[in-house]
Image (tube, rainbow, N blue to C red; front, side, top):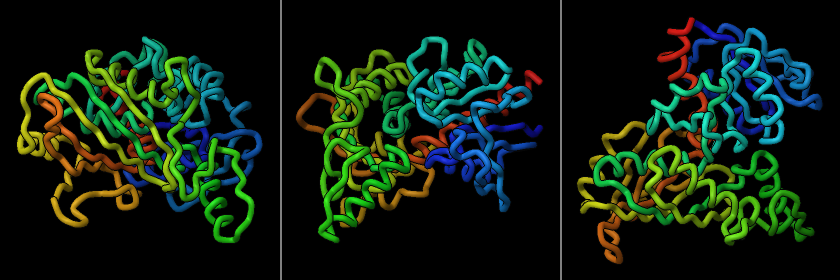
Length: 340
């Protein structure tokens, strides 16, 4: 059975990636609509060797659309995702707006596909934060093995996590440094070129940023409410690909060999862990690839039942577009066909 699909935010970095992933994975599409703001309406985006004309979101009628994959920004999703859902369309939303709503499933297919059973409450499914997705994919097999008590994580997040505007700012600032021109800051709070910024999203009252809060609360909702997460989220001068330094404390003893084998056997993970030069994966190398890569697996001797490891993944693919399309695939396979 093929389906009528709308990609909302189709001209943005994630929207373009969604279109590419849909094509690459040969998603069963009967008809596809590219939807964006009025500024982009009438332009075209490539899809399957052809072009799709962009339609105006404010005027777009979701009646007859089976699935809508949203990535237009939280404020826009707040308005238009419920409008699409009320028209009978199932919405998979990449923004942060619905993630912590109790009646909206927050899903990573390798981790909690069973949560999709609750999608009919509002016809909306939330895609988690990019760094959360990457981390919980790696944590799931280890949690099944020895039960995780707490996680301390430092993230190294690409400029592309802030969308096309973030990548453009990194490029322009880098060019300006070499051209000895003034540095212009619009997307980031400090210069991102040749720098790292320990600040992503707004600060909260306890000193954490909202990005750090997201990683903690989303992990509890997706994986286990008993897991405590302490995160420090850092923006780095990389275009695509997030890295995470993860330190996990377990309720039960766990050794490196068992952890490595559990990770190797888990879906969506590629273990590249050689204690030699180049025996690990960096964000540059994972760009354009689907897996979550895990490297540098080792015991943490500073705590009881501790394990540390490095994670890298393409934030535009598994961190956003790919995860959304995988959700759509599970929906089509396990829910929508049965409802038809």
